[in-house]
Length: 354
Ligand code: PHE
Image (cartoon, rainbow, N blue to C red):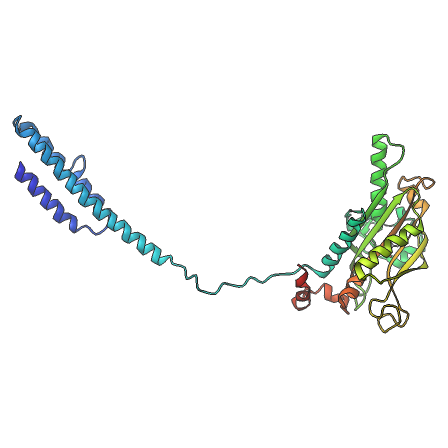
């Protein structure tokens, strides 16, 4: 039996050397050390041994098994190491290669301007309210004091979706919407009067215009609305002066010129001193020293009343500015179409402000 064991050991070890894969190594282990393997077979024959021999042979069997297992494990470990090294070599990344540059975009100048204007007004206690671009005729016109046959409709002809629904021609319908909501809230809560309002509302508006360097059928406005007790024209002027100085610079002056809007009374165009010459007169301001920045006025009593604010208790002011016009002035862009063509060469110029 000793010889048998010795022979098995030698054969197994020689055989082991010929195994060239983990798979083959596994088969080898089953063949020699498995439950139905050759060592087990020899072990079975131990029943015929004498009582003295049995422990001796038993120990020998254990030694052979240990030796074979150790040889197997060593070879298996070597295989695994080799396999791992091969995989690492294959998956190696050359960290010294230059990276792929990801082009960095920039915020659109119109959005930058809107954000700056929002910041200014938030600093003055306003909040931002956005409204729908597809609007009811009621909010766009009727609630803004422009009934069905009012001639002012012709100035703002637009794209109708149905008789009663259109692409809004101005952000002013947000005045009626916000006042209407506040008035409804107050009624629901049983309040005698609705809450005061201080909002701005930026967004896109549409007009049936032929596109050229200074006109676009779709453009942006920022509406402002303040409603409270004792709101006066001086509040409007002070607010707009603060705004103009924040956005155009400290030395700026504003002036109000009489104008007409159906939803404000009195109505005014607001000019700021020319950013280019400071007011002495130049080409930019056509020699006048002033540049128009927005339309404004005191909220018309009928507009207050229609929206549920008692005009004998409340008064307010509103203004609406063109975002493109303001941005063109601020960034010295001469053609409004530049904002819409997505030409990266133009947009790249506003990167630094990200
Ligand atoms: N909605 C007006 C326009 O589009 C601007 C404006 C807004 C005027 C608010 C007065 C008050 O021209």
